[in-house]
Length: 125
Image (cartoon, one colour):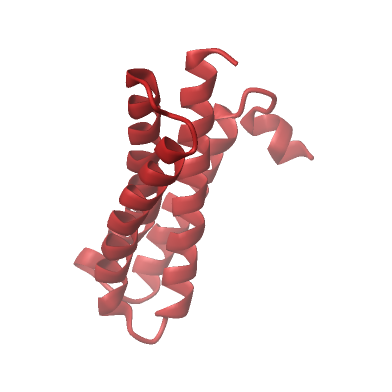
């Protein structure tokens, strides 16, 4: 596997993991919407450290492995935090709608990063 493919796979892994965590935070805190931003940020920071450490300790002992692991951690943070941003400014149906749009757009971007799939191949099937 080339260095570019390793980094791409790490970004896909991290962002998909973070996005799933964000959706679960939003769903579980439906009745306590002002807490969604803080929970998403806290989970994202935990994902940043956890995903970086897990990938780095599983075989990224060189300089390139460090940057690939860092890319995975940052992608996890982004996947976790982005859908929670609307709850930083508002609550209610508008915030949930914006979070849903962000989550769907993030999922589409993850699908486009996959080497064997494109957005359209996933959308059609």
